[in-house]
Length: 264
Ligand code: URA
Image (tube, rainbow, N blue to C red; front, side, top):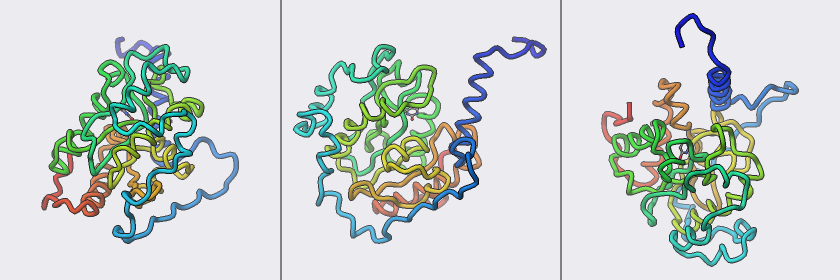
């Protein structure tokens, strides 16, 4: 396309989608129907020691949709249970189901929204540009290997044209995420972006209000933060994510690099 020719429809749609996504990350939940104020996030309890993820398994009603799911006790068993999943309308168009990667005994889990094109092609979460930034946050920022944490998404198959996952798709897939969390039993979860955070916590509070405040997911500490794809468009907010990650590191007893090794 030369500079004088008008952009084609796909480019316009992609640009608008990016813009709406950006507004969503910044806290706008769509066009307001009324002028009602957004509810504020409730900060989680401040005492880390009071939260003992080992004490309480995730209630089985979260996976009761699929009989037998609660019996899977390893990630391999869970992956086998999911099989060649045809449980929702995303199945026919996926290349690979993107289950999750990392340390099955990780203390820290990252949960994103769902696979994009790169992830769908490779069958691994967070391997595209946003994934590279997440890897930098983990490796250059936190000073640990990507293989030390566990990384997965709320939904395991790519929505066509990178649209947002729909409620029926989330409902079909989330029992697998909850089972993953129950099997790995991390000490802390970082929720990446509006969609993942709202899907896990079942709240409609915008990420801009939730981020940086510890939340509780069934006895596991849950830190909402911005999605790396948002940071690619808004690099000025990387410092906020780095602040959130430092909170997580403190809770996990990890040394914090002196000059803020935040991924640039
Ligand atoms: N965005 C996500 O939320 N997950 C991925 O795996 C890749 C991009």
